[in-house]
Length: 500
Image 1 (cartoon, helix red, strand yellow):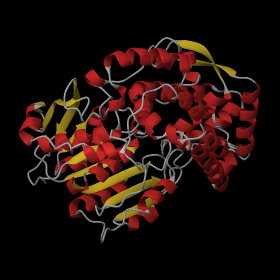
Image 2 (tube, rainbow, N blue to C red; image 1 turned 180 degrees about the vertical axis):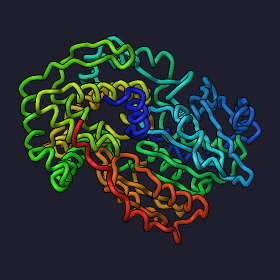
Image 3 (spheres, helix red, strand yellow; image 1 turned 45 degrees about the vertical axis):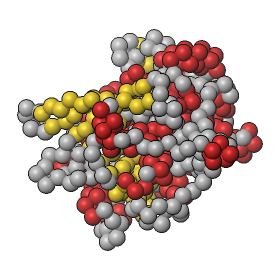
């Protein structure tokens, strides 16, 4: 079995999903009559930044951690203030660059400061500061979460639908006593980041995001293009991507391609000659009734019996396919399940759901997706786009029903229109990505004139030595011109797992 800590990191790192938008006045007349809100002066912003700098006694590397205070209601500039966690991993030197590297988290709902362990020894730190800022709503005194959605003592709930109306109706009553839920959009978050940039005395910055973090990066790029030197987007989820409407067709594309790839691979074909038929047989069996399976608690390791229905099986499979490594185990796990041993699959599904539900502030996720995504999804869209898929419409239907009573952020007019800026943008897509397939990278590249879209073998959030080499060139030059990308053609997928 895969180590639980490795599974946790794998799924947290590859989290998926997206953003909402800044609160503007909706009526043109009000916009015309209301004065523009002027940026706050730098000294005021610096006074809100509280950082403590320490030096590692072994490495000599410095890091600063603390908080940055912002008004919950940015437009009003009065009332409650919230504190965003800030981590600055200072460059090693001695030849450091003045333009830092800002990282935006996936989700929506993930706290990017928890990614610190992944960046402390990053090659990026050799020359640049790395800055991690928790997006409003994801942590600290402003974490908008519903802990009841991630219980520690009810493993069956992790094999049940995430978005339960009764649970979230109860949760929202508590959240509304603490927060103004209309203030937690990505447009507000983008302005928070710009304020922190100014408070830290940075001029130009480099930005990156994966999954929903790419939408955060795009919103920042749209609002503050003059501050961006370069942008790297990995697993691209633009505003045209209406979350979670496209989860079902994205998964269908990926599982069909993976099964086809197995049939064309000599070792995989020899081990699993009837993989497609086995997969369909499992779905047919689960359609009739759930299977009972024993799973171990992710923390206590105590065994429990749970019932796994078809929807939970598909969700576990979908999440397992996020990883470029874990996806290569899928044929083996399907075959084991077909032979009657569902435990490896069930424990993988439990591990991913356990990690995701703890990593995401789900209330913040709803603040984001209800306003920006679900309001643009019609029941006709759901029928058309999720029909004839194995996953079906369950996820998007339930989330839409919860959004019926969730508060909304006010969005700028035409917030989802494509935009063009001249900032160089590197777009990366995995060929077998089950949530943000290459079509979304192509969509963004079509309206960004100074962009390059690379599609490489892999899943959600691609990496490896070749892409690191390309990103190093890009950051060093600040330009897409004359990049050496020849290694892309040499990238190979990992072998399929074919035995114990």
